[in-house]
Length: 85
Figure 1 (tube, one colour):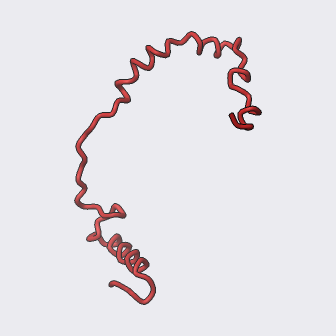
Figure 2 (tube, one colour; figure 1 turned 90 degrees about the vertical axis):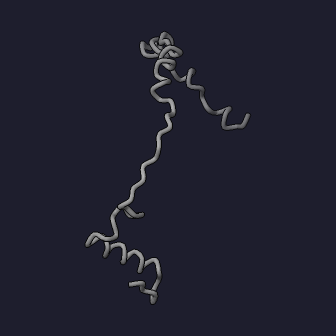
Figure 3 (cartoon, helix red, strand yellow; figure 1 turned 120 degrees about the vertical axis):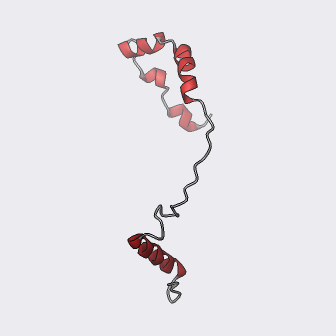
């Protein structure tokens, strides 16, 4: 138990347990709610989709202005004095 735990107030000590919302929380059937919602959030595996007309920048390099952008990015990545196009 660290010193930070000694100085930190517990949530139940900060909450007025007579407040209507606090009373409601204690009366909720949480186990039933979780059991009914669990199937909705269960992991379902599904096959991936192959995207054939997109590159890293989500634009086809054969389309007009996107080709210029792609060439510019490649030139910047190549560094000064090493232009690729």
